[in-house]
Image (cartoon, rainbow, N blue to C red; front, top):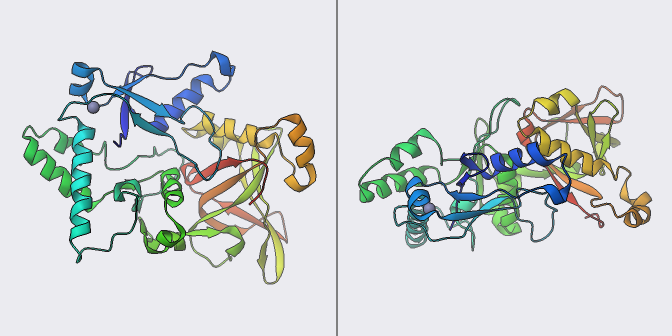
Length: 342
Ligand SMILES: [Zn+2]
């Protein structure tokens, strides 16, 4: 059963998994691993929580997750028995009904995904425009959703939820959710599954995700990705240096993204991002030159796959350099990888 929010006992409130991760890194990032305590979560549904004390567990919010074939983003996992009118029980029932109807109704848009529920794949990405905005997981928590949840009659409530979910199965302002959807889809599904980016338009996942090697200066915004190594500067700033050079006018260019210390400090997920960048920067030489040495030193990561929703411009560093830009740090996702560069 999909659970999008849970009540965190340590935070005394209902949170999504990224808010839990931010708080966990806020309080623990400078504390030894063996002194850290995982959070306890109960169901976000008040009725379920007070009557049943239904436990929920948080997965992968308390560490940096390596990109592997089985990469699993942070999420909540269902543990206990929920009430019949629990928001997640109803959410599941309604999404199952929508899935079943979509399969039966051949006139509706073709079923885009196999083994993947439509509600698990982001279909509308509403990117933040500046670092101060808070991200949101989607429909859950919006005023419309809360209004539906307050409807006393179960049948009308489920019908209203169905209308809401049909209109927008899965909207998110967090790029990590979009990247996770991309990982869930097969190569073929990426070509047929559409993603709308608010303010820009609709393309297939396959069209939105573009390797940095394929960028040109005239391109508009894409979700770019590529392997990058991280360099730390003494003033607390970082550079993400992409391995692959970008050829423009038959000239190879080096591509980097700069993250200034004060920008990182202002970001709401500051502790998580800072930890990620520090860990990655410990192995700051390109892997081909140093891999043997690093293995001996037992370092955790060699590099990261860097995903960013943004654009690429000429760098003020001069000829042969390009700069990757994001408006909002939520539009940057780093997933550590180890050893073999792909
Ligand atoms: Zn519940």
